[in-house]
Length: 460
Ligand code: GLN
Image (cartoon, rainbow, N blue to C red; front, side, top):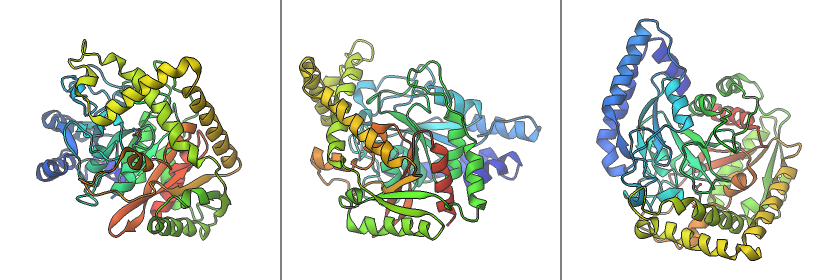
């Protein structure tokens, strides 16, 4: 049963919302201590909500589209009355004082918000090893990192602890853990989902998006959270499709890729491990047999991607952290944060000081334009760019990587954030029992097309 079918079953009284929740609660009881995916749950409220929904359904009262589906939320998205720490000691005492726009929308559609998930501190990482609350394990490859920074969210999905999770993606933080945990993750077009209520990592790159086991879960979440938000400056207004309908239609289509063109890049393949390439190539070749044309493209700026991304990230993060000076939230960030967060603050401060002479940041913005123009030119007249999501397998927990090795996980995911385009990851297969992801990128505002592709691919 996929998530859409489950939601129908709940509405038709074939499955009780309470039973759906209880299944997850049992799993959480048994496994969360060792996986460390949820930082906090509110069992009582969730049970009350599920019971109320079951009663309403019994009485034939109207309920929302997400009625009875259980959500987990990354610890950098404000949810009233939960500790929203961004997995940092800096915010260990901060209780969400309001709901992010996306949370209000989920609640309005009767989704059940069960709890808050672990992550890399302030979303600055790719492994979920830097949380103040300890490391998260990977339920799909125990003993290995789940990826990051939304590793806790991915683990709640892969570990059967909820239906849908919301993560944030600044340079890959939804897609990278989706890839490592063998689930689906979606980073929408920049501005399509309101960031109001998200704790910034790097505001010109940050985007909230859904993670789930199947495409109907992603689609139902997108139908709820994609919307113009006048209270948020980067929010855009575009004609919103019906993502769930698109996903369902794709499953019934005879030749879902007929007439579509997919670009693959040697520059992406050459930095990806051979074993991962093999799996991803196989998936892409299957698409040719379904009517797609696969063509080779050249992306000239692969070497620019990480330096450009990290430079912008450091500067914007430094500026975003100035409010954590100890006066409002208890701790001054520099006094209590971990190494990676400290590195970014120091670097961001240094780069900002040099900015009057236009030494670094100005160049990074120019490089960002080059990357964006190149990607847009590449996608012109094309439908998708496909590649691996992460070029390496997740390392074993405890293995020490230097910062550059850690950053290298992001090389294929930062491109979408730098250029604002939508991108998703789905499981392509396994290498030695470890999941690897296929990344699908499309033109700005063509989020729906990615849902179509994910759904068609899921079906085969
Ligand atoms: N790993 C990247 C970083 O450390 C991406 C993080 C993210 O997307 N939040 O910045």
